Image (cartoon, rainbow, N blue to C red; front, side):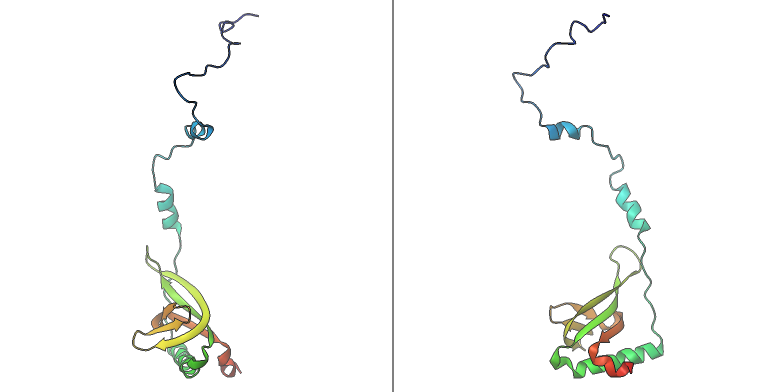
Length: 141
């Protein structure tokens, strides 16, 4: 059986004497998919990302939080271990998320209206939804 390429089919692969061979990684890059709309995927993912609305506390919840803050203020010299669940506003869109910070409490700054942990983290008083600590054991009984 003879074909049109029989004269070149068994020739050795050409290697240039004037140029270096391209590394495999660079050769593979030419076959990578092309993204015509750069950033489109991240824009879609950002739009699909859900955020929570800030919850409004009722009178009873506010009174309980104030009572817990007073108990913490009295025990602040002992650096009590606390868990604060608070609202963290989203930087890119309306709403945010509720997160929990746990650690030893250094002080409650009434001037700046923040809780200050020993590690330096600050949480705004008005963002706090829930306060938990072992020193509240008598409240739960």
